[in-house]
Length: 107
Image 1 (cartoon, helix red, strand yellow):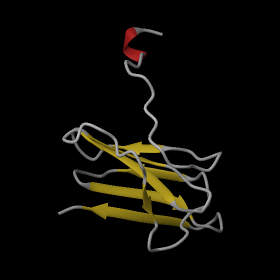
Image 2 (cartoon, rainbow, N blue to C red):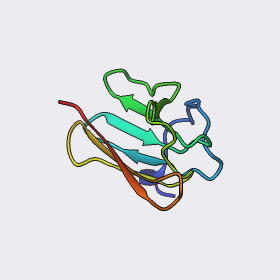
Image 3 (tube, helix red, strand yellow):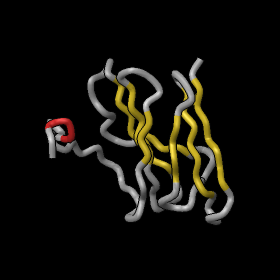
């Protein structure tokens, strides 16, 4: 592994519980910003964020879905950003077939 592929930090526990087969999806909507999404056993979507201004990840996940209730079939989600302060999250519905779109946009 060359120097460009090495990580120069130790793992940082972020807390929270994910479904065993949950995929993670990470996206950045701006310089110094990172949002990470997973899938929980209760069909909610926990997410962690990093903002360079604070210098740390939040240590407990926030939950996407409250107050909407169960949102996704565990393990299936993708996050993307189309510009600054915009997040789009695609996930299968709880029946495992219907695709759901959630989005957040800050003004």
